[in-house]
Length: 496
Image 1 (cartoon, rainbow, N blue to C red):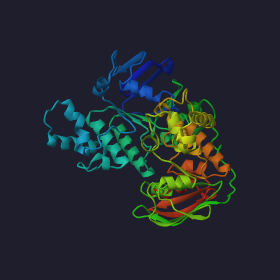
Image 2 (image 1 turned 45 degrees about the vertical axis):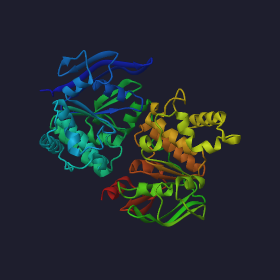
Image 3 (image 1 turned 135 degrees about the vertical axis):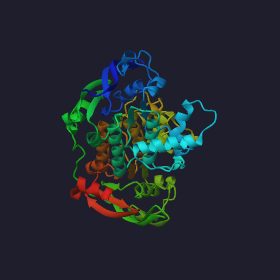
Image 4 (image 1 turned 90 degrees about the vertical axis):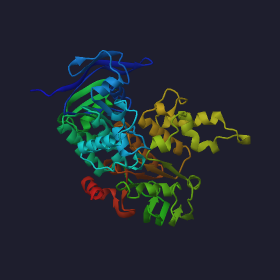
């Protein structure tokens, strides 16, 4: 007996302003099936999910639910049919409690004028039981970890009777331990007959959790089959349309002069007695679990949350970094982990986002900004970093994740820093952009820059770095040369 088919789309196409986002795509999802939807940024994944959710109407094609064709398919129809999407921002109310967020939709759908707090608590407890998790019901969502916010979003979907859940980049901000917990929940959903669409750029996770892989490229479905039919090389080839050299960033490392040295560096409650040296031409990795102090160290080096003890030397000379302005003057640049909330001015143009750190160099007599200089700077870096855009005057929000990351890199490279801090440099970007960014990092180091890569993506650290510092409980516990680093051993250190 075949499994129950939850949803099917046949020959779906969608264009925006004459550009094909999807072209004759067909897809079916069965109950209890975990399907990966893979593809580069701009491949059509988001458009397809929006069509499944009823947010976007296809130009042509058939949508069939439980064996019945649905000529009209709107968000309320998708919700009633049990289809839920958990986006990267989770779409939660940060100022409400866990219980209120989980029960909100249920209370709203019943049209209650007065809230039944007993029902709210009962519904929330039921949702958390369904995912096998224990999150304080009275805690405000804004105070939760990313992993707990995700649990709340999944629980909310399940109490709504979700039969099919799409998860958009669900592991972007999770540690390895939290990813394993999420996978346990996904497997529990499968056992309960819930279908899952898993969207991720992390190939190792795709093979760890998904049973079937569907690949989109330029809006066309180019592959669909059991995960066992793919490996990393073949999946990358389907996604990119070309063979990806997994070792493109490998290089011989010859350390140059000392650029940065910190001694007994620390910030109370964040990290303690950290000492290391960064040389010209070196890519230094810093890794550790969430809360290990890795991001706090990066922010201290850039003056966002300055160290309160220890010493810092730039080019062999004592220095003080008490603000980002100090760091910039000392030749330090910083690309944060969360480009959407910490790095980019989303409504502003690509050009403005790219030039914002170099405005002091774009002025003419009298302090007036030179539009000619700004245009020249933008055109130069768009070309050099291969930022794909038809017009730099468009909002930076119009770009794919990989191109947004290039804009942030260009912003700092335009200042010619001697030291560049990259916190999660490839978070949420596709496999092709990831390889391109690793190649950019290697080129910067080859040109004499010192680069610090903060990441818990072990394959990334091994691909990009010459040396790796491991942090635990705010301290550096190991300093491992790349030649001595091994993926499984490093992963064990992070999950111990």
